[in-house]
Length: 526
Image 1 (cartoon, rainbow, N blue to C red):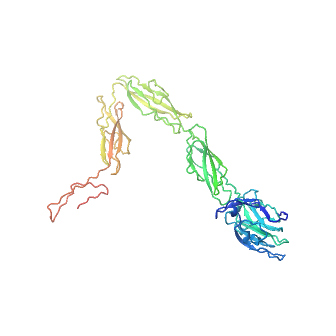
Image 2: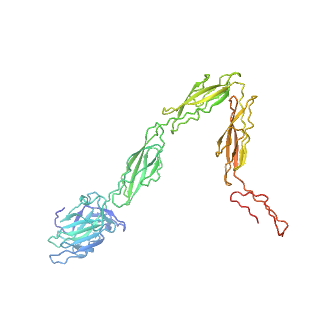
Image 3: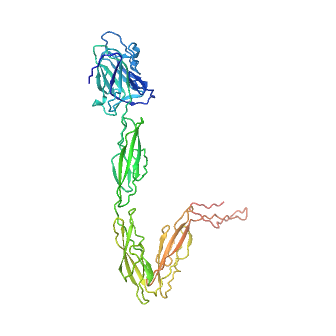
């Protein structure tokens, strides 16, 4: 690109660049030179001469040839050779910005690179820039003033590229070459860009990772920091709001509810303190699929004539969080009875009247539960056996509570169970309700045994609870009875000292009367 200038005195040529920071030294107060304000003052100018190749001087005049004169701010003096350097025909001057300024392609048209020349002669020279001082990009040719060159127009320059070197080459005109007073830049940094990632659709309680790794600095090489903020939706806890990829657990959304939208905002900030525009991401949280509930009509029961019977469907469940269930009972067989409330979890009825001479009868009931989404369970049944009044229910006696030590042999005792009806025998049914699981020898015997769980000396005591139900010959069951077995850790018994007699005897018989060593505990004889 070639531009035409008019002759002038102290000349100022302006090229379009965008500068980048360099933190080698602090910036000074802003200063204005020839109407151009430099935000970093004297620190805005080239501060290193990389090379200077003197050109020809056809007029024979020995002009200023000290390249360091082009460093620092302009002195705007055409009198003293201390203020500028002459390129000469074909001369080359290479400068470096090593302090607080370099050039950056910022994608703007604001003049950023300013070249000051001294003298009335107009001399054309080429402007080149480089990132490393070896590979050069030609930006344009200056042949007068004022002139503006936009480095973003070059296909070899990408936005965000930084350039620390500027090379000025005289175009071998008819005069003695341009007289360079100073080269300076003005900061104009592109802001970073935030990218909160693509919107996501997740399930209730699912682990979610936000992704801000697509964010970038406006200037190549600058680091950025992240700041995530939740704007709407149920509040969640981000693992690290300053991370590029924070995570959280999606909130609970109950079955049948509408999707919930969580909106997050990401702002990134570069090392210069420039913040990006906010970018948002929406995470849609959907409820889980509906799972059918499970009906539990309770345990079979044995009752007597005209007894009050309560069915128990409280064990029914729905696995979906937040789902409620409704109940529906119906009688399948047996003499018809009237349930107190067929939609209750535990309806009751009065057992049919039976004569002493009658045989026991059975009533079968069915329970179906339905969740709040309309999904119904598979039916579950319960059988109620009604005995004639002559049969009195037996009484279960699980025996007294026991306290034993670790790994002791324990025998439960249900022998105290009774049936008041003459000639009625009873059967036993034991089960463990809580505590460390043990193996009962025979759950149908009156006195099953088991080995107490092993406990360490430092362990706390443990309690095992067992339940006994006895059934008489007609099939009438007792109410359950329970027994508690408390298992304590073993105790260390100190050894008993034994005296030696007579004193001074040549032969001594030592007898350890009693000692209990547990695991690594040793018995010491002195």
